[in-house]
Amino acid sequence: MLFLPAAALCCLCSALGSMAAELIQEDLTLTRRVGGKVSFSCGGTDQCYNDYIFWYQKRDNEAFTRILDIRRSNGVIDKESYNHPQKDDFSAVNKQNGCELEIQNVRLSHSASYYCSCYKRYYYLIFGSGTKLYVKDEQVVKPVVSVYPAASRAHLEGRSSLLCLASAMFPPLVQFSWKRRKDNGPLEEVPSAEGEQLELRESGRTAAILLIHQRENSRYKYRCSVHHEGGTVEAPTEPGNEGSVMCSAGIQLHVETLLSERERGAEH
Image (cartoon, rainbow, N blue to C red; front, side, top):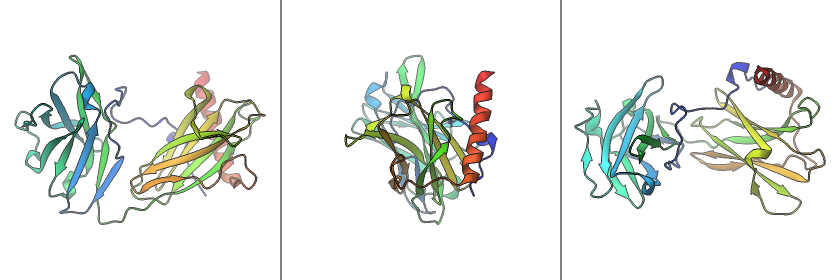
């Protein structure tokens, strides 16, 4: 049975706080063994205001520390200005409209998240979304993904809700996305004005709840995709079809409780 404590209900925010993730870091996680090599990619640097791309290391419960910068024009690297304790372990190289941070000999102490950054204007930084490095002797395992109705329409005052559950994966980090299809038409992104996503996380399992703002007789059907280091996994069913797997009573009751708490919080 899925147990998702109320404290876990959140719109998951990274340590970047309110800073927009405008540079492109497509890898959510990377997994390497001790002694291996790893490269962290960063794209979209053509929008940077000046010549410098910065790389940061962020360990859990610690502040960002700058590792190095690399100049876009000539690839010159500066590590000495920042005096990172592991500076000799890192290098960087320019790529087309981007750059990469490299570690040639991965050690356990490199376990952390890595962010690229640059100045969009002369006075503020933009960041990538970050890539978390796991240094473990474990195989990458794709998540098992299922979609369930999360709560009754009556409970949500005319809205419907769907629960997309990803479980049994390694590494444990995933990203959810939702698409919809009307009748036999093409899949399309869910407009932000017509849906709101909440995420819940516990050890080994992550769930996304999509609150859909639509009429009861809507002809849209929805599909959940989960992005993971092992690849993108789509839910095996589209809720609304006959044969959709029903959520267990225990899960549905717990989710309805969480949604009730969220609604009460919004009123205050």
